[in-house]
Length: 94
Image (tube, rainbow, N blue to C red):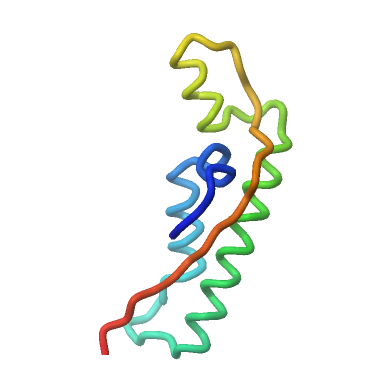
């Protein structure tokens, strides 16, 4: 996953892991086809971007950015509106 700070400032790492696991991981042992994997990656990237956008606009959410600011003595809460870009890729062994 490559992403801008608009993702990492607003979406907790645990939520990113959960979202990728739920949308991209195959529930069975059979690897998805190239087209299926591409579709899953796109759906997941879209979902992560929408989650980040929603959280960035929530004044009551204790975002990763706000948590870090508080740890450094600033009184802050809420998301942080910023550029939001996410790219997902998968490497397959042939």
